[in-house]
Length: 151
Image (cartoon, rainbow, N blue to C red; front, side):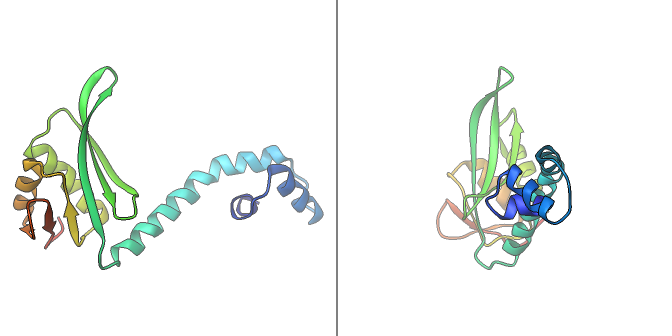
């Protein structure tokens, strides 16, 4: 019943009617309950399958960026890794914007998502220092790096 609601553009009432025609007597609230319970599991599985497919993609590129945001009244740095399709892969919050924070963020992202073709940054020196420590070689200019090994 959850797949009917997700796969086809049906309302909860339409799913209830379709199931009633097949001899299953449930309310539309039960369909909504099951969607709320299992929907996040389906979404996580779809996300996991997408990332597994992307690991095999030869030209997987990441864009790394950090920004200064207010979180609970305190100004902190939000680090984000976004792939070439615009999917946010990883996010990380720190109080500092230095090599150690960049290194922790990159290790976390590489450990979770595996090896990539290239990383594009905004030119922050912390990225360059962290990539050098990870064993990355500078590619064309100061904004693009080729990752040779994943951590």
